[in-house]
Image (cartoon, rainbow, N blue to C red; front, top):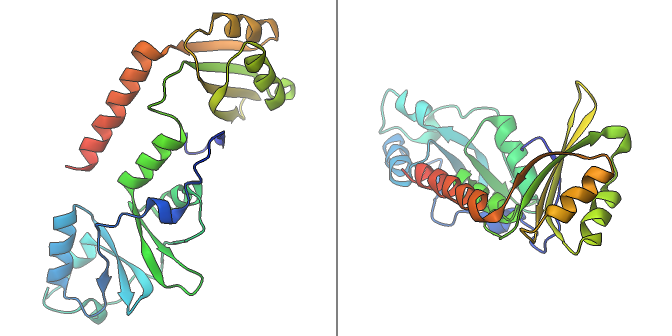
Length: 233
């Protein structure tokens, strides 16, 4: 899903300031390794941003703190990594997710154009935002479709759906490069999809799976809630 081209028909903007985890504090260059270790343990994170005043200077990890010879030494006394993962405070949630993947981190610092620290986005807050963006808890059926890329048309998918008195509340695609097939997943605002399915089949879309709300959405919610509990452990 992270690598899918995703279209969303919602009003939420999901930019970085809306996803900042207010409860997790940053570290400062003058802080000791011991304080850094305590803070990471208290907030259940393995990485924290380090500030010089209010300027973001880098991300320190739990392993780096543990490897210090003397925890009483300040963070300033050892070399921070050259890599400094961050996003601007205008970044969309997809930009945040890309930064997390590119740098293999679970927290992404947010800065303004002057590199002043605005906060951080944690894995948990990012997942919650992504769940909202993808209508995880909204009622409705999910259709998985497939068609050749050359025959794919977003406007046609929308037209077929709306001609059957339904609305798309979440839509994303994934191109399979090995065979040129376009995989399409729709979240609809209805669970009555028999007519919609028949229409897609008439237009040569292969319906790979149908997940109705009563059972599948509850399972999806359970998985999501279970993941949130895991992240809070």
